[in-house]
Length: 198
Image (tube, rainbow, N blue to C red; front, side, top):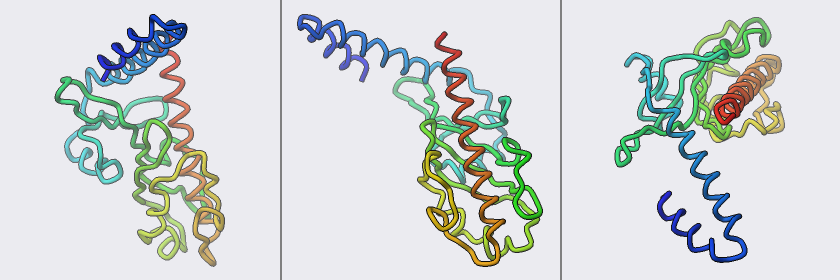
């Protein structure tokens, strides 16, 4: 892929846009190298954890051990032809990233898979002590509505999250902690990328 881009850039060097094409190519290479180099030495999560993590990020081949100021696992895909791993995204527990967020009577502990560009892959409800959770946030239909959702979406009950009568605070609390934690993880990733480029 990079070889083809380089050939295209070389062909355009003779044109007036040659410098721009070469600059774009070099930026693409630096981004590609940054993504790949992040995955060179992976300290893998234990196998039992990997199986749980794969439930919310099935596209990943391997997961790192948990790390970061905001605790998370990194999800990688093997690129055997290149002998490298590519960072696909992250998996995290909502209550570890946003411990101050509560619903009606408890924290919402949910495991969330998230791509590097801020798209939720899946959500798995782990634990809570909500009195109306059994009919509001425990059913599979509740967490399924987050799959494919962007961190830029509003996550509002009645707007893009299904409303549940008699459990408004529980549903709003769960949606809010998923949204806030996912946005925090992406912010951390972008900040880390920026530091790596400096």
